[in-house]
Image (cartoon, rainbow, N blue to C red; front, side, top):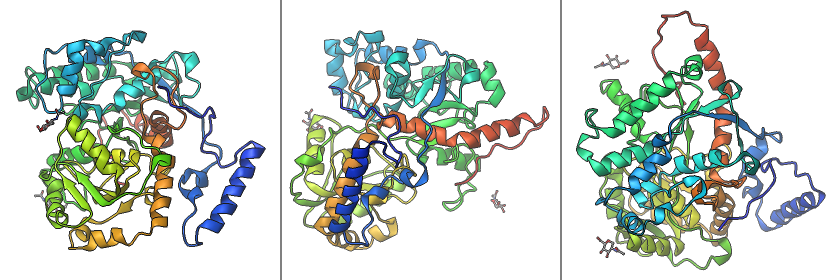
Amino acid sequence: MAPKYNNSNKPFTCSISTFFLSISFLFAIFLSLFLLSSNQSSKSTLLSSCLISTSTPDSIKVYVSDLPRSLNYGLLEKYWLLSHDSRLGSEVDNQIRSTNSWNNNKIKNIPMYPESPLIKQYSAEYWIMGDLATPQELRTTSFAKRVSAPEEADVIFVPFFATISAELQLGVAKGVFRKKVGNEDYSRQREVLDFVKGTEAWKRSNGRDHVFVVTDPVAMSHVREEIASSILLVVDFGGWYRVDSKAANGNTSDHMIQHTQVSLLKDVIVPYTHLLPRFDISQNQKRKTLLYFKGAKHRHRGGLIREKLWDLLIDESKVIMEEGFPNATGKDQSIKGMRNSEFCLHPAGDTPTSCRLFDAIQSLCIPVIVSDNIELPFEGTIDYTKFSVFVAVSEALQPNRLVNRLKSYTNLQKDEFRQNMARVQSFFEYDNGYPGGVGPVPVNGAVNFIWRKVHEKLPVIKEAVVRARRKPPNVVVPQRCHCT
Ligand SMILES: *[C@@H]1O[C@H](CO)[C@@H](O)[C@H](O)[C@H]1NC(C)=O
Ligand SMILES: *[C@@H]1O[C@H](CO)[C@@H](O)[C@H](O)[C@H]1NC(C)=O
């Protein structure tokens, strides 16, 4: 079913053109002045872009690099043609395989993306590609405008399904994943890089204006240095810090990470694909649980705090901590848990973020983020403090602190959080309701927001390209990104 979308090209301008909208907007402000006490921030500041500009550009020009189909949709076919996948969470895909229903989309012959939660959460590459693969006449709502020559483009999109490539290899022969020999994922990474590096477009910019989707923390792991200058669409910087600290021979600390590959100046944080269905605010009922968390108790690295939090919270009343499974039972459990709880805990896992945060937002469960170095999508446009609670790890680990803080929120405050959250639910939605994502995208959906964010980075990237071009041949400067 296709969700409704707004036909306006400029949804974030504060100057709303029609008279009636202006009147109702004024009325809403008037009303909110009555309803909210003056020290509570008005809802109209939720989208901080409202404060920045009323003349946002309405497009970014994108050229799609000419990679063979075998490096994107062909990989999905390969995935579905596996005879069986025995990994955790794969039973749903094995079911789809057994009925051949992955291929029932005859439009442009685009196969389904895997439903296995461990892969589906990284499906950004599929939806971004679906938008670009949509016939031009249907793309009137897309922020990305396709151009037919690289010279006309602001950026070059490299349509490699890096997540599927990595997951395919993990499914077939996990043992060689870290090696190069016998690793088809590595061969594909090589093929992509050899291809793009051979183009004039790459040579002009040294890849700085090329866009790669690298959501899975293990994707493209063999060529990270080669794409370090490019625009990377990532879910967070978790996996990349480790590359940096290794490159620095361990000579790096938590306080000073030597970014050589990722930076908020050029890269874009994209949302995980949520796995739970959207819950509409009109259905909201009294929530019986104070705080809910489902997931693994034991995690490596940053996730060590999970274990400590677990022990602190497990015996609290109105707090539910449960271990989950990546299957249908686990999904039902999460839907119920998140819709019945006021707050949902989001501690760091293997990486600072997880798709749980986006499931909480779709469930209108107020996120409690205990993950000190988290990066979030679309910041600058979305103000997360208007619907989430941020707690320092050190504070959360003090007995009773977290629960007491959550209990201190009034019903009015919680309702306001939920109403604000309802306004951004669509921002994290990749699926436009069309098979393969081929069809008009919602103006306020994730795909458009990603391209808007890329557009915001353009001045810095263009400057870097010009600076690099004036350097005489054979001048080598160390690779570095600015720290932000
Ligand atoms: C680590 O970096 C610091 C500051 O740059 C330097 O003084 C120190 O010698 C380095 N240590 C090692 C083991 O490389
Ligand atoms: C999900 O996994 C758990 C643990 O392996 C199992 O007990 C449960 O029956 C599974 N549910 C489904 C629907 O497969």
